[in-house]
Length: 280
Image 1 (cartoon, rainbow, N blue to C red):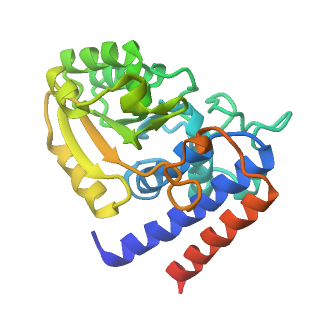
Image 2 (image 1 turned 90 degrees about the horizontal axis):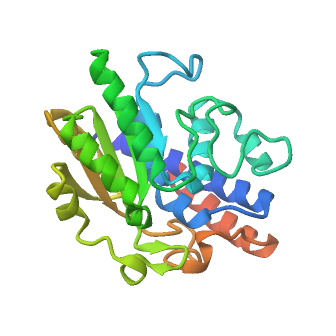
């Protein structure tokens, strides 16, 4: 990937992280940890990979993206805002009364959201349906879905995995945000999904493992997925929970808690300094 493109994506991801912290602080609630860990991936998809049009959010030929880990809505909203679906200022209305930015994505209210999600395991099932529909209609669009690693404890995920392999959904790419933590602790301690790659392989999927904060590795992985035929692909991305805010990184308490005013100032100082460094 061109160095200037990588730099542009890094700048965009830094702005997304600022939007995430703005949103959850304003709401006094939300899920910053898992939003920050997937910020790079969503930035890469919406600002580089996906065929989407903010001027026509329901364009029939668009690629579909389902946020199966729906609690990471602040990351999705911030990326959609940066892509031009609405103003970044709207992040400050997160979870407010009468705001369309609910705690989980609502496809009926927010342009750019392809499926309402939140109940873990259901998003990948919706993505399978979209991909199967595309196959039946001989459409060219791709379907992407992002899951949390703790979400893999849901049985519905594996029903969907079996369905996708059986119907040879090579137009489907699932991504697992493998940050090793869920609300109750480390995923290996709560109910280990490991080895994630071998489980998906056993269900008939093509598997790729990458550093989820490296845009070059993302590019290679998604290019690889484009070449796979007659089976779905899963990209397991190793990430850091709370990435970008030092006191949130790998800290379980930040799975579902908003920063207070003092913590907000510390986070914003770090994030804005990083953005200035990238832009300088």
